[in-house]
Image 1 (cartoon, rainbow, N blue to C red):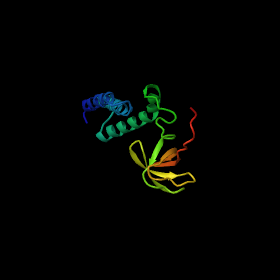
Image 2 (cartoon, helix red, strand yellow; image 1 turned 60 degrees about the vertical axis):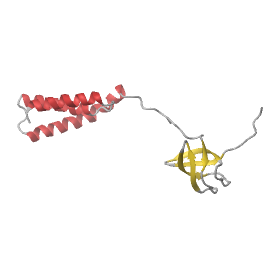
Image 3 (cartoon, helix red, strand yellow; image 1 turned 90 degrees about the vertical axis):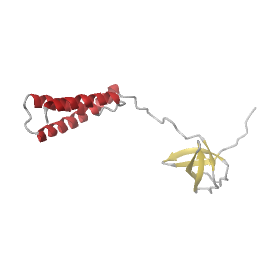
Length: 150
């Protein structure tokens, strides 16, 4: 491939990096294309397969070495802990669920698989408290209707 094609490809990939939200992938491919273009310009690459090999090696190596550092310095902060937890929310039973059995419950407008972790059966329409979530299954028990002090 001509050296100028590598340079154009490199700048195009760098522009693509600026147009995408902070994943820091295209920057390594773009810079690798620029390096291969410069090497081709000064005559250090003789065959197209050598250029592609160098491009792949530079891109893989630079991604492995520098991407994590770039993300730590410039990337969006990764939230720690639960961002949006459903534990403690109130779900509504869609069908009767015996104690220890699995049925359906509605939470935030969506039907979920729900396991009744309580000792009593749950009736259709009954409000339940979400204790935990495992995958797409809610672990629920009857909502306690304790007396409120006024």
